[in-house]
Image (cartoon, rainbow, N blue to C red; front, side, top):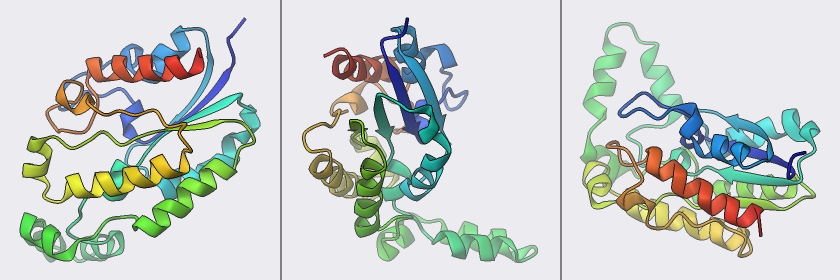
Amino acid sequence: MSKGKVLILTDSLGLARDTPEHVSYEDTWPSLVRKDGYYVHQVSIGGATSDFILKQIPYHKGFDPDIVIVQLGIVDCAPRFARKGEIEALRKIPFLGNKILGLLNKPFIRKRRRITYTSLSNFRKNVLAIKASFSVPVYFLTIVNASEGYEAMLSGITENINNYNRIILEIADKKDISLTGIEKQGVMSDFHHLNKRGHSIVSSKVLRVLNA
């Protein structure tokens, strides 16, 4: 008999990976939660923004969970050199499109344009809407903090993560699952995906809440 029904909604941070380092499905935090005795329905989509996760909820509410765990935000808040629509339009231009994208994909352009896929105001609306979609407890994992290496690679990511995490912490009403400190030992060499140790740490934090 299971301990309860848990709906897990995540971007790629809940998934197994082969690059830049390998993490098997068995070592992911949703799998570890399942191994602890919970009946888990996992919806994890690579590259998903909060808008996309919100749109998926109607397809999975029929699972009738006892609790919902949500991990999102890094795709929403990462500094971008162009908007999604601009990228799609340029990719349609034969030969020149990809060359233009290559020229635009520069740190100083990200810093100057200050674009994210989801604005702070829309992120707030989405997180509120996700929480309001369920009559059971909804726990949000905070976005993994940026290391010095991540900031060096993607200027502005530290400030963005801090700003978007404030929204999660405010809306979570002290029911958040903080991932503070994981960036020091629990992420891959790309600075944001979880390595095996990171997944283990996250599963321990999630299970601490579930088993309370």
